[in-house]
Length: 171
Figure 1: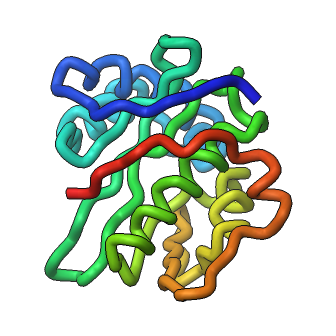
Figure 2: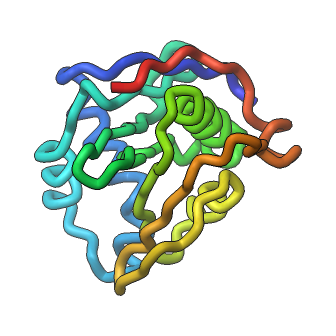
């Protein structure tokens, strides 16, 4: 697995993240009949919250991002905008980033983490390995939830592929 680290995002990262989003989601959105090259980028720009986002770097270069947004009204955190350069997918980086985020959530007392993933996306298997279960589905999205368990442990497959543990501070 490549060495990776994460750093807090800044407003200056929005265009790189928007481009990566368009590249990573294109196949799934085309399969679902929903791809619009302008809209996929603009939706990211409109919702980008650098204070809740981290940039994933491999070898010091931009490789992806992930956001964890608190939602006090819903009593949860939303895992959003988790994109990794396609050339780096499948090598354990995504697993490592997700494990670090969820461990931090558990430590900080975050009881519920929610996300949505596009129907048919292989990312769903990653989320299921980390305890997310389907809560609802529609024609485009699968909504998943993970409730904290005090004795939750990632299975050996996740641990073997996860890598370093950078410090992440939750909002």
